[in-house]
Length: 432
Image (cartoon, rainbow, N blue to C red; front, side, top):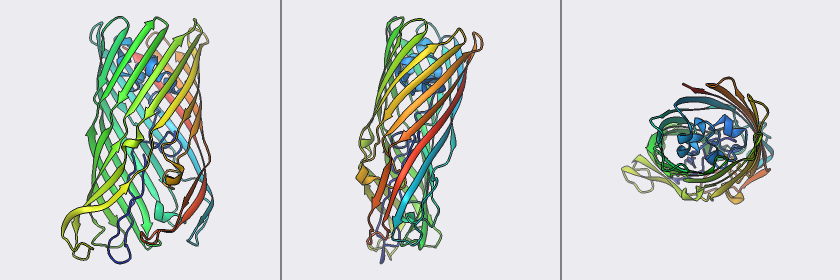
C-alpha cells in the first residue's frame, strides 16, 4: 500500500546565497511510496482486500464496498454497520547511497507502520432508497530519514494524514440498475521538513485544510449472478493553510503560508460473476488522473525589505511544476465458498507508478508494484460476519539520481531503493 500522500520539492531563491529551499506537498493522497500509486490508500475494505480489490466496484458484498461504488448500497438490506482497519507495514530501503556530503550511508527503513481505519453505516429507507455514511483514510504517508543523511536537502520527514467523511445515497431505478452519489468532505494535514544550504538551515512546512468533492456511481445487475459497476470520484481542490519555520530565525522563512494543490479524480470499472455455488470471479480497472496535479504554488503572508523584490506584504514564495502522469490499476480475483460459514478470497493486481523515473525523489521513490492477496470471510450467524485479509505488495526496484543544484543550495544524491508492503486487514459487519 502501499504508503500514501506525496511531497514534491519546491524551491525559492531568497536573497544572497538562496537561504532556503522549501519542500512542498506533492499530492496528498496516502500511503505513498510503496502502497499505491502516488500516495493513494486503497485499503478501505478488508473484504475487497482479500481479492486485491478486484471487482470492488461491482462486488457490493457488504456496506464497506460503498467507498468503491455508492450505488451498491441498494444491495444492503435493513440497517448495517461495517467497521474495519488495515495495519500497513511498509519497508523501503535505500542502498548504494552516494552524495556530496560526507555522511553517505545506507538507510534500512525510511517508512513507518500505521493503522488506516474505515467504517460505513447504511440504512434502507424503502425498497428503492438506501442512505449511508462512510469514514475513510484515502491518502497518506510517513517517510523519515536521519536529519544528517546525505540527501537531507531533498527531504527528511514527510507526513501526510487525510480523513474523509462521506454522506451518500443510492437509488434503485429498475430491478437491474441502481445509481448512487456521495459528498466526500476531506481533511488534510501535512508536515514536511528538510535542510538547505548544505544542512546549515533546517526548515519545516506545516499546514491543513478541509475541502469537498463528489462521488457518482452506478451498478448494473445483468442477472442474479452477474453485475457491473462504475464509479467516479472527483478531483479535489485543496488550499492548505499553515506556516513555514526554521530552527534559525529567518525573516523570510518564519511566516504564514497557503499552498494550492489538487488531488486526482479516479474512474473505476468492475465486474463480478458468480460461476456456481462455490466459485466467483471478479476483475477491476481504475484510472487515477494524477496528471491534474500540474503545479504547486506556495504563498507567504510577508516579505521584508531584504528580499530581492524589496517588497512588504504577501506574495508567491515558491512555484513548482509537477510532472506526474495518469496511472492504471488492474486486478483479478476469485472467491471460493468453503462451506456455509467460510469463504476464501484470492487476488492479484498490477499498480502503475504515477512518478516518472526522471522526476523520482527521496520523498517518494515510487515505482510499479504487484499485489498478492488472500482473505477469509466468516459468517458467525445471520447478523454478524468477519473478514480478515493479508496482502504482500512487491515494488520494482527504483533509483534516485539528483544532481547538485548550487543555485538552490542542494547537494546531489543517488540511491537505489527496494520497497515492499505488508497489509493486514480486519473488519466486522453487523446487520441490525
